[in-house]
Image 1 (cartoon, rainbow, N blue to C red):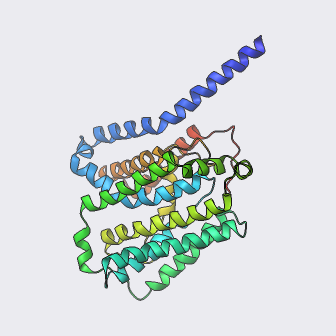
Image 2 (image 1 turned 45 degrees about the horizontal axis):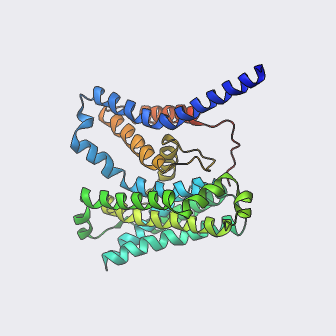
Length: 320
């Protein structure tokens, strides 16, 4: 009897912890919004500032969507920053001839690098962490080589697309499609199955290798598409373009409550909530004119607190 009561209490405690972990990102975003609202005399809550936060996060929203799919399978992708750097160079170059060609070229570059990641990971059985770290350095070098003489500048006409309604519409389109395919189709169910256990997914009829390869290519395509927005916003591409993007994506998704180990617990809302929380935190620290080094310290502490509170210690962490 006592043993049954202890098991029941343990289950109730576990359920309460799971509920708390689900609500934590939403609690965090409310706390951060109110805190910076009070500290900035509510200047951070003006329509103009909110629009600026969302506009500046468009690239992160799109790239995080692709990485979300990879992390749902239990993988990682650290090549996003180098992809957007090389793809942005392609966009800036081909935009001199045709804007649509520029968009397609950026997506093709992303597809190409994503395919390399997928082949090395799936065919050669190399962990996604190692593969994408290697391609990150390789294509970061390509980006530096192509911009050694001078930055790659986009044509003047591209600045006409630097309107908040264009950029936000593109990000919203990707988010809506991503949410639909993840939540409403067999694609999302297969990703969750792979993240929960590759062997079980394979026995259930899921073509694990094929899905993994396609998801790495999809993540590359999305980042290649985001390169157009990046080029429109920054105007010129240098060797440092896209630096820390992969880190910002990882932090955003974890802040949004996403378990790094993947599986059935993943929710697409992690992309939206996590990126917004990350962007609001950065914007608030800048508005308070805090020293950049102190900003980095604060972001690191917030990230650490969220990770500690949100980690499922009963699950075995396996990065595939």
